[in-house]
Image (cartoon, rainbow, N blue to C red):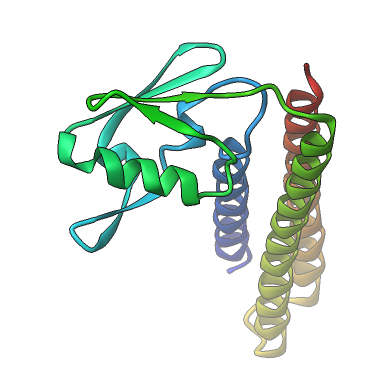
Length: 185
């Protein structure tokens, strides 16, 4: 009973960390990375579609992304989606290929991005704590229904806290790493 609850907690906490990794990958640093735009939603036949399903995205240089659509007719739509996004990038196209020059970040923009990272880190910490709260409530319910003993409840609570601490530390480490990337000139 307790082991099942702990496995569920760990799976859900891993999911929160994975979601944070995906979010942090989309935060722009000074370097060009295909993950910056691959999840960008583009209207394709009246359906929002991730850019990575519509084009090949590559980073031939440290400060340049190239986007080659599979269907040349979508080039204008992709260009509009990039301009409408909060990336602050200006695409240029030659009819077959879109080039995104990644300008160096200004000090002001770096501070804004660090705030965004801190907000996303807090969201992830809250998600992990919510998992802890839910599983803790489940453990208490099990104990009330006499499915587990009081000792098992105490053991489960301490294990749950260790698990929570482990994932919060991972979140902190990811945040520090991303912050260093943003500060790097």
